[in-house]
Length: 635
Ligand code: BGC
Ligand code: BGC
Image (cartoon, rainbow, N blue to C red; front, top):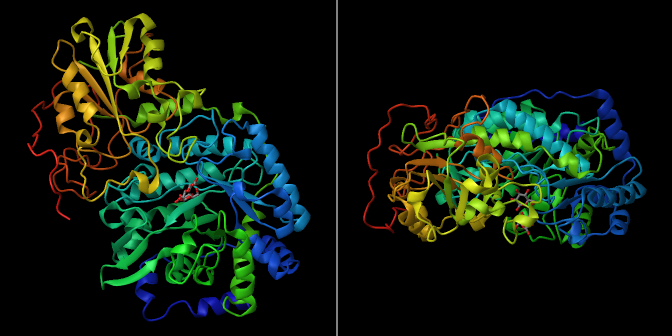
């Protein structure tokens, strides 16, 4: 308690007061019995064991024996990392490794279990064969908090089946520039929407935490990950203290209301655009991590650093970073450099460069979180536990946004003869996007999604195989012989900075993927209407593509269940009503190749835009197509 007071006393200096006071004050809620248990457990630990609790190695870089010998408190598997580095590892094999790591940890620190964290960001996406839900950007378009909560429940079940208790989700970014490669991890550009859906996801994930059903959620990445200039991943966010709290902070208020127990620090830096003060990397920002998050917002859970994020603080390396711990990082994600990190951190405490009170506060937070989780999983270690195809299918159905339509074209009659073009129509990797089986979602094939259904397969199920022809590049068939063309265009999968659109590029999809324009040029205007779907992780400039389409659908990255796409494209065969298009944009849709901003004055469609497909008249005027395919966008 004295330690807590000492930390609090240093909190609000005159300089930092405006930053802190921009956020609403929240009151801590403490459970006296839990606090007593935490204090008692803390007393049993040596300094070395305390640092062990704070250290998070990657499963590739540690054995169960080392977990025991170093008294490690938590591990993670990164994107595309599986038990035994075998992508075919079954839930039972995940569970077996979890059991070994857990037993080793309990030998070192009896009564203090180990936490395993994973990126289950759209279902348990590192597990081959698990149902993959649409990415957040698609869920944002559904605007459906109950759906998002249910997806949280289903994801928690899948994660618990594998013996993992912690997911690094939800991302709560409020994206300002869609060039950012992580735009699809965001629910949208509207802070209120991010808050509402973020809260629902945390509720779903953490429900049943004590009973072994729920998993720990992580509100990430704190804060302003979605605000970086030019959408550069891990770049510099310019925002006033008020914008930081009200725009980028909105999701955290929702997550805290839901009782989120962990927060991840962000790779980005922050520059105060009110006074042009550069505050540097978030991992080293004590004002935001401690004074705001832990004190002003009364967050009692733990703050985890991002992947080697400590190394980006001036004066730090991946092996040594007292500054991050002093700023308020409690669990340090040091995937590979954990051994020197432990030695260096113990030394830093012994030399007084990290106060013992800070270490005790960090470990208290870790223990508080651990004692809030029921360690025995209530979910069987089966593949069945990761299956929720009907829920994912519904999510897909609700997420589709119809940007252009010719009245009466959709739904296609269940007797239609359809030509499907575009290689992505038969590609689960393209349907799933990044963070799918592998980190980037690349180096996979349909065989890596044994339970999934492509759009092509779904249309064949729905219309009958004989009624559906597939011609990947559209060169082998005569469109006039079909009732409709279904064309699928797509961005290739990407994750994090690898998905950034660079400053020398723009949002014109056909510039980055000329084959998609060529495809439409081959089939459009040749006797059959063209229904185009775009799989993308963000809104893109598509005027030239929409002009060669009779209907144009933003399908985002729908995940493993292409059946949800067919549900909306094709009229139900029975007397069920057609669901129509209920998805509405959570980002503006650009009318020009340089419209990167979420605050674009004249987009093609604003936030909330989209057609239902039931309109009897819609404006069908041709969209402008500037001659210059590669304009130099203003900086
Ligand atoms: C990402 C995080 C992720 C972590 C662990 C980082 O590179 O920024 O979102 O949780 O890796 O995979
Ligand atoms: C890991 C990801 C991580 C990334 C960070 C990858 O190797 O698999 O989980 O986010 O590195 O750079």
